[in-house]
Length: 278
Image 1 (spheres, rainbow, N blue to C red):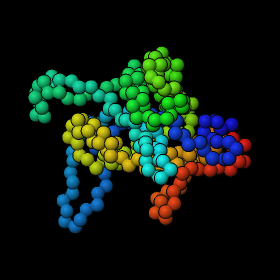
Image 2: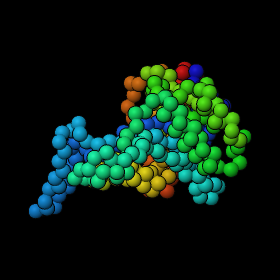
Image 3: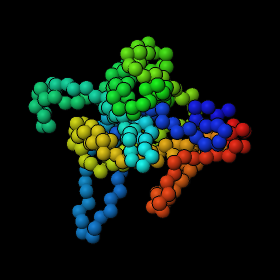
Image 4: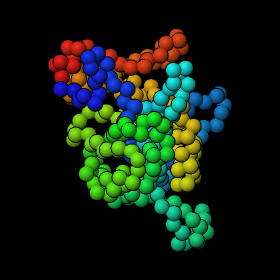
């Protein structure tokens, strides 16, 4: 049977999912191996070189988002963007080079292990939820959804439970089962969309892509994030049709076309027979 956290009863529609926080990691490269450009006649082609494709710098980020909310007048009351944090540490350069002097503070990537994930979850994600979560939902159970990657913190982790106990919120961890479909808006839509925005930049060092990703996240249109949750619901319908499998095609809801016509998708419905058979 489909998880009761997702389907509202008796009507075959998905619950609002307003109490779900999606977190996941993503590598952001300083440049693509191949890029396409539209050139004017006679325009000089852009040229960017690296020693080899393995020397392209990259930074991993942890992202946390929730579903944006609107009031009865259609005004946004919560943008859903909880935060994005790079896995980096500040260090002093040990030697002078053509790019910087000895002693210059620079950023170095951090290997993502379970203690590092715990530190980010306890000191970044949970404080962000406590600071930005909409007023009036203090009594609602908040689920943090993550995949089953090895470094991720387990739901019964003592450090996580201790951090939650120090807040006035009921926050719980959820882990996706191994080899399951991807019910996470970050992997479905958000990360690819944010990556396409950062690809427009041409960073020369690690500091620049970190700053660029953070700026693009801050400026990201919350309504696009809201539509990502509609895509998630449509994907879940396709997963149900495939009996929980991964053999499905990404559905197209034509959200932009409907929006231009003055309509708006606020939820996705499915047939009662599909729920019964799942």
